[in-house]
Image (cartoon, rainbow, N blue to C red; front, top):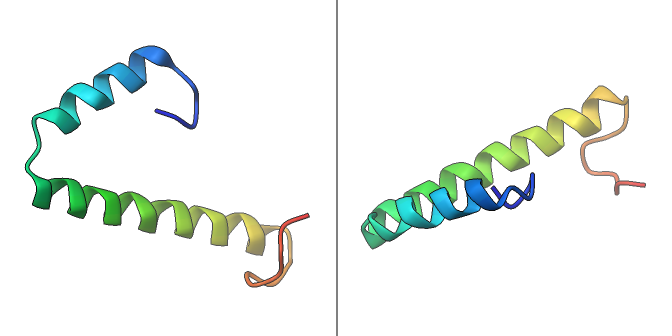
Length: 56
């Protein structure tokens, strides 16, 4: 939600997270982190750069 800046999406995410247990939030955070890392890796390698080189 914070990526696209939609207030409605952020409000919905807040409501969902308020209903989740702590262990569920930790797992969700780990999964989202993996998704974003994979996406970043895909972006970096799609442009022919090493996945470990800094972004411009």
